[in-house]
Length: 268
Image 1 (cartoon, rainbow, N blue to C red):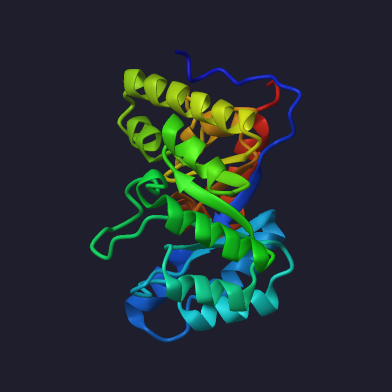
Image 2 (cartoon, rainbow, N blue to C red):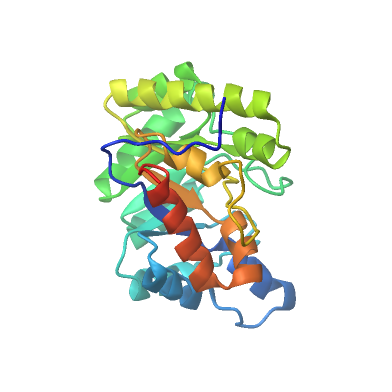
């Protein structure tokens, strides 16, 4: 498969959700108030972010409760609140009432979210969470792998939206493993189409990056490869974007990711 080619479609570009968790990670490494993730969120919106995403973890390793309150007060674009399916988190979400919620798996010892939510294995719990959060006025998304059974379970649980985990594809891209990339891209594409056939909004995210080099690279970026899929309505990107910003600055990093997403569905 040729990952260098861009794709022409009549579909508008996916929206970009910028995850600000790792601005908070940097702040927490030293304590104090700087760098402020809320200030980063405001700059992200100025630079073109469509949605602000954050994950309030049970151990509060990056975003803190007070950050959530300040984001709700300060931001005028949709907030996408990522959280585990726990009574504590559901209670916080019901009080804050963000526009979007993405329910994710969470293990305290993991470095990052390592896989998709097992909707099948905890169906009633997830279904109840979807009902509670819909009643609070939140659009609920489930962060799952591109597994047909899990996608079907997500629809049956009452979630209007899914976000497919792209981590394996992103890792294969960093390794420049074309065979693994092709297999993962086919799997993601099939999952997106199944989701659409069930009436779900289909989003994607995790690990997607652009090249950290000034000249165009012959291989398409992982962000562009996923953004080119016409079924993707939103991309949620955090760690790779903040890492890119270390080299080019946050404003330029967001502009680079936005441009990559738009280019993915337009002709050179």
